Amino acid sequence: MEFQDKTIICKDCGNEFVFTANEQAFYREKNLEHEPKRCKACRDKKKAERDNHSDNV
Image (cartoon, rainbow, N blue to C red; front, top):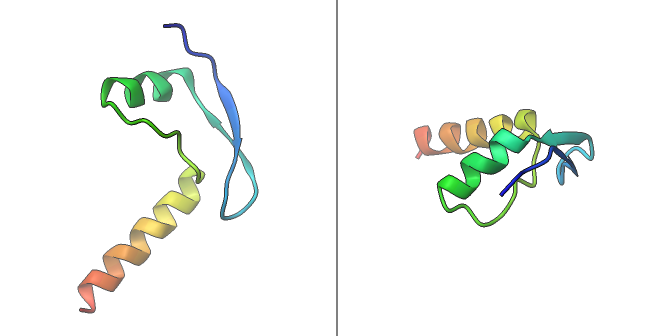
């Protein structure tokens, strides 16, 4: 299957980001069914919040 870059709106910040053809191929290879809902910056921020929360528990 041939993938094409796809523009998505981040659900957190509302900015557009590109879900590249290579990223789509990676998701398919890993059997990930849903495309990302957050841009890289928001994903990193969310991950940092989770990591900080688990450190404080």
